[in-house]
Image 1 (spheres, rainbow, N blue to C red):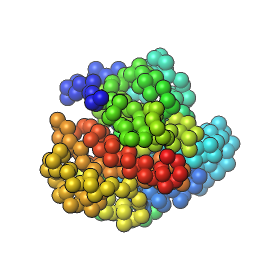
Image 2: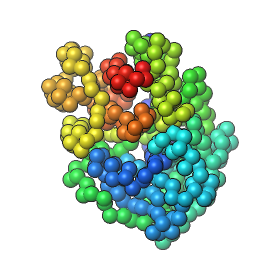
Image 3: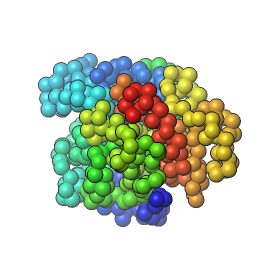
Image 4: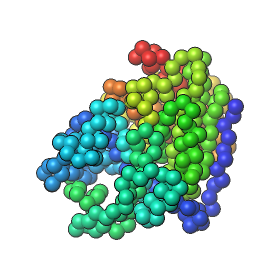
Length: 384
């Protein structure tokens, strides 16, 4: 079955006013990790991100240590527990023990946190943290949080009255290493969630009802299937397409799909990968490879007929072949993309690099090649 698009492009300047749940974009991806200091070093050196803020015992945080890294508008917050004394600390400690390093919060910046929280709760969201203000010498932040799939939450952040490095309680920090002259990526393009069999439509409906998101794309049937495994996916997005959340579930097949593997090793639903938008995927891949990041391999045969269906791109086919970069084209343009291997020992969280040239798709033409590459890795791990 072919992919279908059910999302109408918003009219510039009017979408936010008409949106029942307006957003300004992704605020941060918050990770619970076993060792935040070492994780911050990895994302600084391997991903070229810049440490900008810190919270820990040295500035009054007795329970957790958090490092804030940025690349353009993309922001990662890496948190580990020092002493689990509060509900939040016990949650983080338990999350790492049960799931390994992973994403606990896809924080969204909103113009009015109280209004966003009220709308969400009125439409069925489960409250995690009620709206509250935090202040320091840089101003005031209003935030609240609601629950979504697994143990993931969405913190709703209103920071228009704040000029500090991240949030009250954080102090500016010097970079761990000197960041590259040109950043490797500049934004979070989309964040993908994996949910249990039969629950994809439930969570798509959650975003439709609770946050006013609309359905952008869906991939079902033969769209995402190989000889051995299959999955289904639907993409929800806000009215301005600044926040995009694909939701995946496994489909019945001969062997275990990548979603089944994730659910088994993560211990339930959670965030599978983040796509990072880059303006120069060739330079980014070369830089990250040199820093030790491992990417999925693509057979040379993929590139033998690439020009016949993908057409010309700004990157020569031989360079794409050398770096194992994938291409997809639709009616709006084309995109270039590549996927890392999991960035921790459990085969769970990984990343995508994406360079868009008109296309707002998600690489449908690459699904077969991508999932065969993932299956090769699953087989090496003994999990196919």
